[in-house]
Length: 128
Image (cartoon, rainbow, N blue to C red; front, side, top):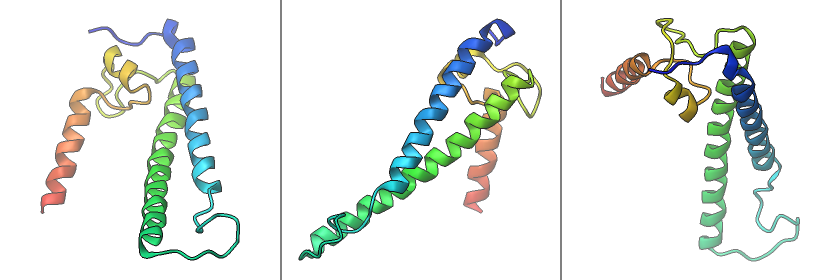
């Protein structure tokens, strides 16, 4: 298994910084978009389909912003781990995180085994 080493720091620093910028843009766009019909302040006649569409779009924007905010928190935490030289090691068991996992999800804080354990615990708790 290939693992992260300090020679990869500039690459992951750039990847995480770029993702932070993208996520902040998503959050800015979703908070700046008016959710009122027409967006111009002018009154217009709307039918139920228009109202339903506006509500659906607002719900999608809210979900998108929620996901972006969670991922942004993960990215910022990963950038702190990178600065503290703790990046690339599982926060639970301390083992190195596979480089393929970090390449796919640079903000990953857990190794595959620990991530699987947490997801299994979470789905088990939901069933109760």
